[in-house]
Image (cartoon, rainbow, N blue to C red; front, side, top):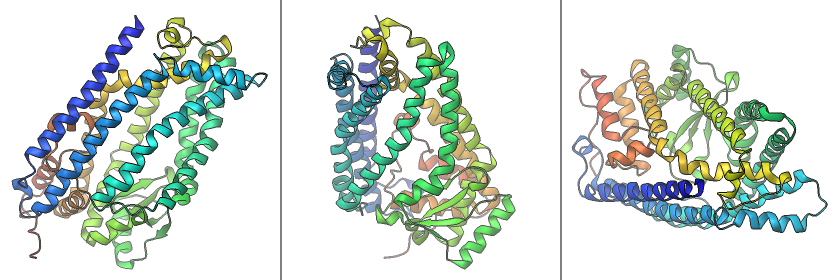
Length: 429
């Protein structure tokens, strides 16, 4: 029965993703020839067409990825791939402690996923991104990043998986509660490690050296009652021409990070407005809410896994028949392999919450900076990052964490009705 349910869910999810991608491609292509009226005086037609072509290319690649990873999921489950890998490991690791064999199984499955994903990553970076002028990464840097990511993933992931498996084996029926507490501790640790230890392994972070801009930012932070460990510029241009800004860290370890590509593109007023938007996420408790939500979802997921691990049909329906000693790791792998298939219909809920937070952060920015400056910054970012101004509405509701450009700009304009037009005409050629 569960086999049939899984097949139906996988087919519907795969077809749903392909249908949404097809809608996105058709909608963007249909609006490629004209810049939306709201942006006509600011975004050149060439930039609008570039964004359309970039979006279409990414969507088409995503469709191929959807099909390939659906096939991989079937191969690992219904076609017996996961069981076959374990059979090989059983013969190769005879006499080895059970925990090492369990970790080896997790490692091999992770490697299979990484190997399948590698051609897509290479194509995306060195063909798609390069085709549209965004790639600045060299093959040597790509390999170095891959090695660093692998080492960090093993160093952090292996102990966590070993701990969870140990709890599953020895902590009784409520093992999932202890695993949840371990997951919370791990995530809080990562919030501290990422800005201070992990991120510097990949990028150089330099204190903002523009005294005038730094003074402006410090003034905004003071007005908003926000304390941070500093404002840093990251060498994002080393890998990509895309621009961004973000907050990282937790508590007193919070840092403000601007990509160097963004600093070079925006004016001081626009940078202040972007920062005010990001501060809005903290002021409106969005970060805390998102963390609490993720912890709540993880608790529910682990509780479900705690029940499934005791159900023989769960393994048999997904093409496996593990020995008693390997049951826990099979349950863990199968659960996280098939969970996205069943969770896909819930995607709009997460996207809706994120877009709502973006609107609230925009409103906060309009209170502490000029809404027109935020509009100017957003339009530049849309243009520079080749973000489509005309996404398919349904596709956007499913996937987009940020509101569509026209809707977002329209709300910002309404927040400053007496300040005149928000989109200044583009400079003459």
